[in-house]
Image (cartoon, rainbow, N blue to C red; front, side):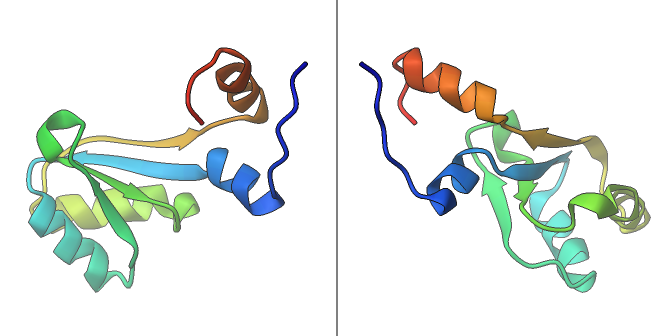
Length: 99
């Protein structure tokens, strides 16, 4: 029998949308993003040699963010949205992976 009770906010956290940005210089990219008024910038040290940033906000401003980074002298290697679906969460749950 499969039963796991979670709150709405927990489910939202498991299936949140994120903007992933891979750059050559994390510190310079953070300064550019902060100048745009973007806060809550997470550095993903586990991927791409620590040159990946993750944003949970400004998801619809990807082109503006890309332009600002490039104009600010940051080499932009990748920028994409990542979103875990409810189906992916369910598969992780029944597959025994830690969620």
